[in-house]
Image 1 (cartoon, rainbow, N blue to C red):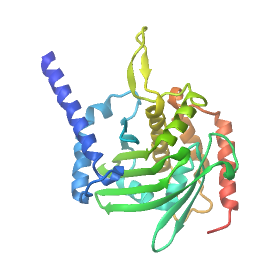
Image 2 (cartoon, rainbow, N blue to C red):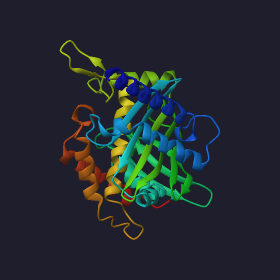
Image 3 (spheres, one colour):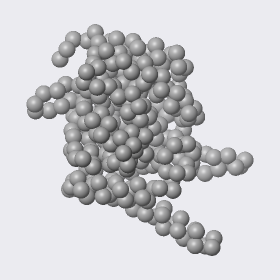
Image 4 (cartoon, helix red, strand yellow):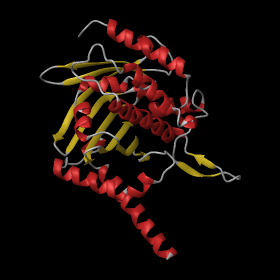
Length: 313
């Protein structure tokens, strides 16, 4: 009986590994390879949901979520698969709108500014990425994201944000999501955050991790110490896991308080989103705690005021 259970668990783990490796060959993750059809991509995502059923039900996150990270061939990558308490139509509407993506991104501590530029030829997001405290935009890094909706069907959607360069000398900076409906009230989402790095970027990240972020860790457990306590992964994989979780929590938060075309510029749920996102990150203080709630709220309010005061483009 025990051996049979172990064999089943091993098979399930191997299936998860296979599906993750398969997904990394698809365009949603920014890797090379022919893009699948929406029907094939939806089928792959359904298979991933089936393979991850046990991990989604039992995990340290206290919610249906699975996180994986990698550092290979000069690319750092974090993947999150999660079940959202939101209808697929809500997810599809929110994540297929560049202007709503700005409301999502602005929840992240490091996002200092975001504005969508829409025209017939290309949709872009002008973003500034900085430190986890108030700072002028001149001290932050401008990142020009190209927004793309690569699939938008009744049972599958996929969007991505891609920038040629990012902070700390990184390149091929990519945020991507794909989703399928599970039932009328739930959606299965795959979120991917990745960027490439060369020697200079790797050196800059290592200096940051050894100084300002020396005590920071990720979510993956790499082993146990002499007292049997978990040892969480650190270094660059820890960093990409923290950022992937912050971005995912921003998506999950926004879907609980979505904006509508009739709301801007008033946005009645902005305060609720800010407070919810902060409290969601505080569920994982070891990895995500940075500032107090009052500090976060004051900083974000000023950043939104800066966006409102900026001239229209």
